[in-house]
Image (cartoon, rainbow, N blue to C red; front, side, top):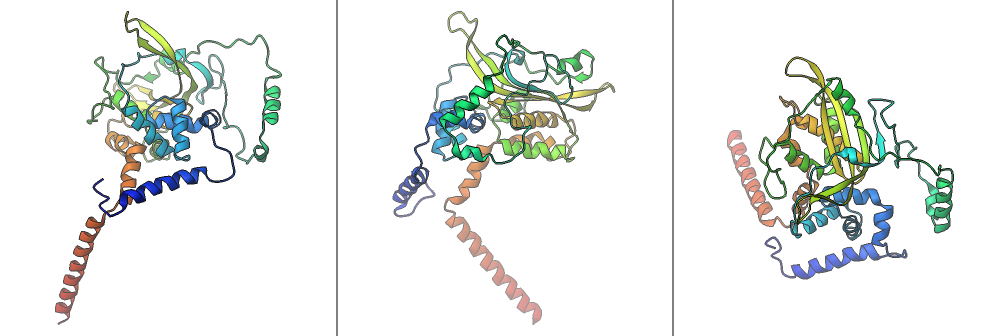
Length: 366
């Protein structure tokens, strides 16, 4: 590393790494198992998978543990690991109507086909500390499960699919359709650099692995009025979609598993090109259960398709270049590396500039 041209630098770095590992291991508590992280801290694992761009719950849990809970660092590890793996192929497009739904809500309509399914969420609870968790044990968990499943009907039938809520708007001609995806091969952002204006599929890929907080910030700026997009949530889904690939021999579609995702569709007012007022659609989808990210992505998808950008959230280049948490973290972290030469150069120029300024001041006084 060119930055570390100091005697003893390698040994100091190695010891710093050991101290970091020690900070994670010290204390009297037992070792935190990767299985525990995956099962009990699943929202953090989902976030790491989404921002790391790799659906691998076990590896994401390992990265989260290794990074001592730093989601930026964990996502960096996961994306670095992804870069070492061979590219075997691409999955086939799949309709999210085939999603095995665990949560499905709409704020646009009260009664939706198939009904609202609240699913697992903390949205409807007070943000109060649960001190009972301080005494968490197997007996308490067993009793909780027994209470939870005691009153479930034995013959309950869960629909295999649910209709899309925005289809209601489409049928009435109230929804303006976005420009269709190109029929040629999709733009792979892991192999090609972005160019602007970027095709929509490239923009959606970039946002799908964007950093949740950064995307929320930009989407929130538009929601508050620094832009023209004030959306309504048409539908939010959390569930599992089939992962389908071409069969290596026959070429026919073949389902090899399923992936947990969050999907959001937001609608906003839009004046059609033919003068007919319609709603426009913003779309977001990301790995795991990360509803804030999916909604923010849907808002930014709609924002960045504005014909005349009037704010940062509507500037496609600004948005796509600043939501990648790993890129941003890397640039921020590089300031911690030695910049001795740069600073000494700035210091030397500043001293000379002050010397000249004093001379001119003395000359003016004279």
